[in-house]
Length: 216
Ligand SMILES: [Zn+2]
Ligand SMILES: [Zn+2]
Image 1: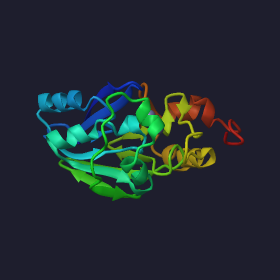
Image 2: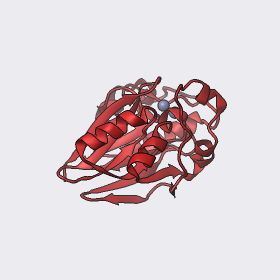
Image 3: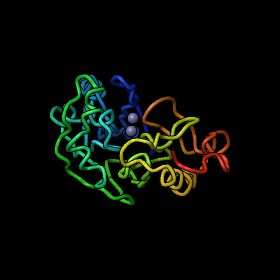
């Protein structure tokens, strides 16, 4: 079933919050409501959608800071990879300090590990563990769309110099688990414009052979 995706750049880091639903279905998932929860809630109400899951690509505060409002107002199960659960429950002070209006994320309802399938009406969403940017970074793959969080961007990859980051692991995750998806998969990153797997294989400077020998 074709997928509908709405994108809302939110907060001081312009994090992409996504609302995804199967065409014609009233059930949706929200991916990374990172800030401006009230604005996301208003958009979902306008679309007339019911929230089933609130999905987190990783535990950084710019991806979690609006989730509490969305869950309180619209419900849905809050989904986080187990390895980032601690960071979600106790956000780093330096991140919170950079995010005016940050709200403590809600209790985690579902802890995932990768290779799960989350089902909503008309849509199967597969979880792909992509450790590196953070230990619990996850990609969500459904209907030829891939939500990559801060692991893979158009023309770039996620920084791996933050606590818990690992550059070699990040490149392995991207090469083995993301670039192996069909080339026409649409990549919807946590910041910036969308791209495709094929485009990144051809032109992303960080993914060319020998681009990065040692993590920073
Ligand atoms: Zn991040
Ligand atoms: Zn981010």
